[in-house]
Amino acid sequence: MRHSDVREEGASAQADGDIPGGGAGAPGTVPAPRGGSRSARRTGGARPPGRGRRRVLRWVSSVLSLLILGTAAAGYLYYRHLNGSIQTDALNLGENKLGGSKPNAFGQTPLNILLIGSDARNDAENQALGGATETFDGPPLADVQMLLHLSADRSNMSVVSMPRDTMLMMPKCTEPGGKVHPASKGLVQTNESIQRGGPGCTVAAWSELTKIPIDHFMMIDFKGVVRMADAIGGVPVCVEQNVHSRTRDGKGSGLKLPKGTSVIQGETALQWLRTRYGFEDGTDIGRTHAQHQYMNSMAREFRKNAKLSNPVKLNSLAQAAIEAMVVDTGLNKIDKLFDLSMELKKVPPGRITMTTMPWIYSTKPGLDGRVEPKPGEAEDLFRMVREDISLDGQGSASPAASATPGAPASPSAPAQQPTTAPTAAATAAPPGKIAVNVRNSTGGKDGSAAKVKGRASEVAAVLTGKGFTKVVADSQTGAEDTSVIRYATDAQAADAAAVATALGLPAGSVQKSDQVAGIVVFVGKDWRTGGTPTPPPPAPTKAPDSAHALNGDNDQACMPIQPGFTW
Image (cartoon, rainbow, N blue to C red):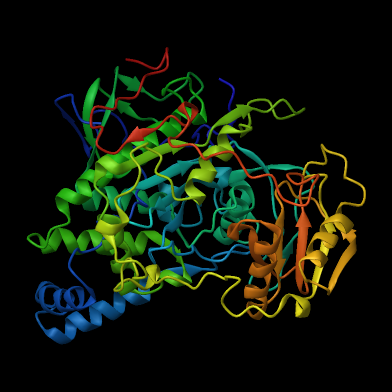
């Protein structure tokens, strides 16, 4: 065992995951024939299906009114109650905001949602679900982090998990009230990001690392997992041998299941999602793989249950989902969540790919058992998401079959309305009127490369030669692995895009930032010589083997059991 577990390895007699009532015979654990294959934050099907907002409003006002008080007025009041139950927080507390996902040439817009599992123990219900008592009312940890990418043409979905023991540089995060959390000077464990102002800082950390624009987040805590699993009626999971997650000194989740497939719900489902001792090699990586199995299985169960023929279960699912989550302000209404669920539902399980960020064990002093992104392969995975390349190697649906060029992918879904990407041809001023600063950032973020002397002046000269006469080689420098262009206001977006075009930089290199006063070119470690950036190698067409991909149709997935944890 190499991975650390801040909460689960506490010295308390009631270690993290020690949930009363667990075990193979506990309520909510029903053994089933072997053959079946995660997180309750999955949204596809978690809300009532239909064909538009009018349908869900009509359903709420008619069916729910009869179920609750028997009047149409009661249905309307219930709809308002559900809206009032949605908890929200700021989307991104960081400085370098990438903006939302941009539409492709056919007007179709991808969607990126960060799914966060919080271990908060700040109320009686969460505390009753277990954990070391010294952690009660303490700062939460973002122990589950998954980026869900819905392709622009809605043909496929990719999910990338980051192990909770991943060490990252934390960005500066500013809370809405003004409190500032400075950028870290050293590596910080990724699950601590939520303590730096909330889920918006976890989003900022992902954006900084992956350069993927994140459109929304959804966060769920322990009690939310229990409620969701109960509402859906259980989730099938599989283990290769009898398993009991309990060490001799009382640590572990307490999960106890027989060999084969069991349908788990409630506290047992939470135990499954929290188990590390007993799965694979007893590290956080095994826990991540178990969460993938659960999430795929839950997606299949949602599809089976999300039918208007069972309004009672539909109501239970909808209310459990709403009460379980904290979302960003862009998802603060029932109709927005409903539209999102309809978008997610378009992807068949066979085109859902669950992956883990490729990682390596850290070799830095004091970080034994922690991991860092694997050079090359982690970036390959992030790039595929950025460029909307499916991780399963099957490609996307034909654009001609899925959309008319220039038309939005889903006119009825506000979350998916294409935003106008800054382009040089849009409203950019003439080059001679665009003021540009150029900074030498060729040393890279980790300082591993020496700065190329005079590089800012060389690139400034390139722009001058293209008609940009208001260019200054800035005395300030920077530290960037990849060359970027940042601008301060929306009015500068098209001008910044024109600068990118002139330099041969991709559109994705243009970012809005509150840390610059105008348009600033940061010449990164990737562009150390010449007047034209070196084009990147072709993007991969399939997730690397180290990402441990699991297909959503795989109902035969079964968790290997760690030696010593069978019964």
